[in-house]
Image (cartoon, rainbow, N blue to C red):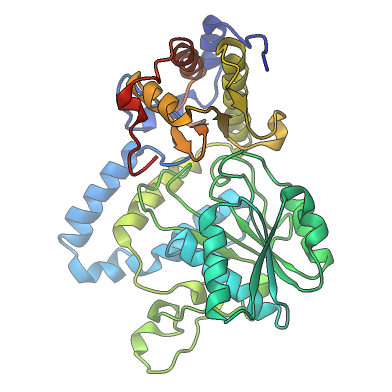
Length: 416
């Protein structure tokens, strides 16, 4: 597949000069000489995160000590930050909380979906969905001794596979490899037509593409916060439960912070009302502090501009890479239509891992997904059009000169 180059570098610089989001780049701590195309895996730290963590560790923790659970409202952080994330995903106050990891939250909400649809035995997903989503549902089925099972089908068969035995459909809105984007409202409607619940994974959506959960009448959702929200490595995840389900849904993990009165220290569990009933253990305050600073920065940007720029950056990279790479083995995965994709771009290549390593050695950071995917993310708040143009040029040079064909680039690290 060969295309005509999209723009010249001077034209890319002109796009940067007119970019309404250009000022956000100064809000990030990024190393000089690096073009970071992996914000879809781990976002870089906003400068405000460094300042906030120092404040929490020195003043709130160091001086306030245990009193800061009250005086600094540590205890309210999960729902406070959850309400802020709600504004990014089309949810209402009281429908989102920060807790646990994406995997744990997906397990909780998959079990919760079964509690809302007793008698149904199937949780439906697509083959090739992000593994943790599939593993969590498989684990739930094993725990319930087969009374609930995971069923996976090809993406083009999914809508037709929803039936009267489907308790919930579990999908990642933007696929982690191909970047294909599901139509959130249409798929939710299809699930509801069979009285099934819709559980969305928003890990590659939140902070990247426009999401309107309540507009789509979605039931449940989970998401991580260390990608486009720039919450830091291992940052706590979030979950959404539509208000209409909160009184009836039951979590399988009944920790003390989900109790109606945690500090009553009762032997028996009484779930808290509302979204707080989905919280389990003690909130990770340092992680929440870093995340809140990242979310606060994200909330300053117009979501429509964020998505539009991200798609434009991805389109620029695709067009330039296909026009200039000159390698017949390089193949775009996922949809070519920008409206059908998220903000990362994946190319299949037999030497995908080594290609990514060779690009990193030249200052362009992407990542690799087995078996052959070189993946590049386009975070709109800190990337420029000229950087993306340069990254495409680097890819072309690596392929043209077979720079990947060196021993140091062939050795697999533990994290790819």
